[in-house]
Image (cartoon, rainbow, N blue to C red; front, side, top):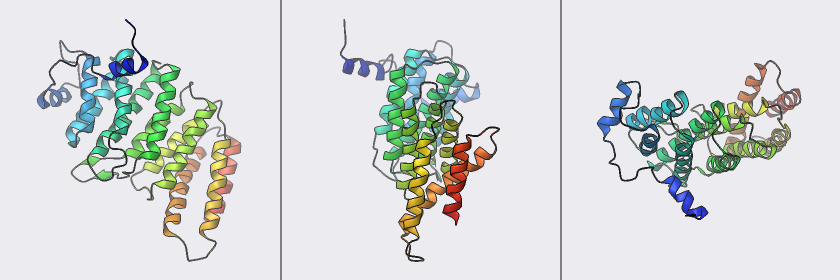
Length: 298
């Protein structure tokens, strides 16, 4: 029997055994007491698909303490999940990026943000033991860059609710994708453009280290043998122009424009500091970045 592309995608998103009962809270919280060993008679592949639902919980004990840890341990640390289940999980988490996107301040942000951090685990695992096809990689890159700019909820830590941190979590996905041999020069440009767009549109100067996490994604690009500095150079030129317009009227500045420039500058300052620690940073970019930052400060 042959399936259409749409029907096959639907089958991959569905759990491998949709009829099995959902495990209760005691089952999941009990895993932590045993260092997340897979229980006897259970399948790591089936359980991670079920654990993905915990990533949208407003309860940080389930979301961070169990859902994230299950994926981190069984996929990245132990490599227990077969490629077919990793692909099912990828599609499910990418769908999670879209649920409620555009909303701001509600609980739906947890599901989107932690879908992103789940995808970062998948991207990191692919670097250890490649499992994605080129098509899957390109799809993940497109979904992640699209989500980075589409997310409206830019909260960091919420008292009582824990981390939202959507920008930081998506930066982590891009950091690992930036290290992947499958990334093309066009993909490099897509990552740079998405980071710049997020900083321009966030409406805030990030306070929960999101700018540092974005800088780490950019640093991963600069370490590539095929690194193309042109997209970053184009961003620096655009930011310099934005800064000139910002200050053209002296002290009568536009506060929203100041935030846009400041948010971008902070990420680039972090990138410059990271490059200063590298043994052999790309000299062309290092020089362009240094000159741009001097103009932005002056």
